[in-house]
Length: 321
Image 1 (spheres, rainbow, N blue to C red):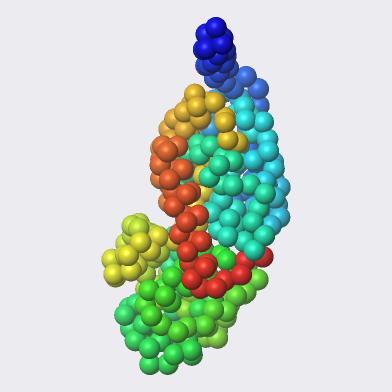
Image 2: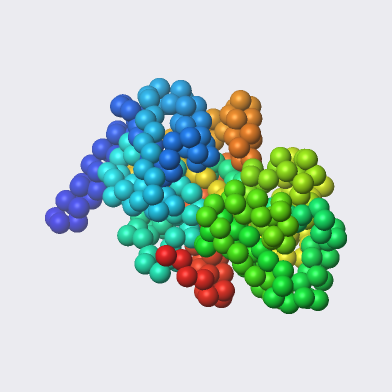
């Protein structure tokens, strides 16, 4: 009798879930963005939200909750109702790197979220000042080996993907180079242009203008594939640095236990929106390479990055506050 009751309850719950998903969304959807209005993440979130709203037939209200590199917003999204009406613009910092902080966030990226859809990524690119004689990564490694502890690499802050890319390069190449953290990308770029810093793994979107002007020399990109804007620049993987995939990525996630039919609907609509040439162009202006994934593929990427960056942070002895 108890088993029969349990089966009936489960069937009724499943039917209710399917019914709820069939008319989803029946009201506006909220998208939380963990960065201030006007920044790159905000522009990405709003661009996708606008296209998605048109496909869903309901407004998508963007709510900016800046602070702690997206951790505050991510924590808020984790505790929101799992009904599909609260979404989060997931970012590599808060979803993957923050898990290795000295004081880990209140959420678990793998357990507290349902991956919905990947949006795309901005690759980091290894650059040097044009006065540097290095014409390749091999040349740069040779320089470092001749002068251990003398060459430096910049980053916009401890624990950024730029910093972790530099540490991965340092470890894989077996070289001794000094990390110089800055408060943001702009001062790091300024010192590279001024010759105070040897190299930088910076976001391609931040330095593409300087590359086109010849004020920086690109040596390699940190993504798995070459960047279409700079097709002649090799990937770190092509140069023998295996599993060197360090990018600034964006995606949409929802609180865990969001109904699977709702997640499937959102994934399909977002993936279709990401085929729109206008949206591809808009995101491309920010340096974002669009890429679609299933929820399972996006979930595997998140978990893989959590584990990858935990290894890098531990090996390099990095302390992320």
